[in-house]
Image 1 (cartoon, rainbow, N blue to C red):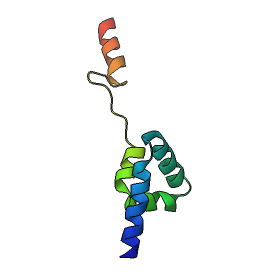
Image 2: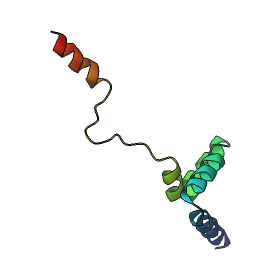
Image 3: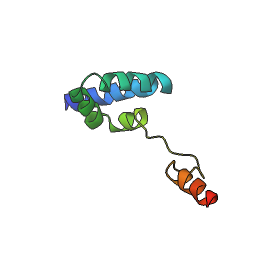
Length: 76
């Protein structure tokens, strides 16, 4: 039970930080080694997702592969 309390306290402290500082610290902690990355991903999944969020394209954005095909179609 002590381990769960420790994890909850560490998560609470990270969540009390500003978003920019929290993301920087989680990335630094997870980037130290593959084992640390695995530990952070399993122990603090919400913080890990926030720090390593995949960027989404803007609505209506086109993929790079579609753009050359469209331009090639115009040339014909």
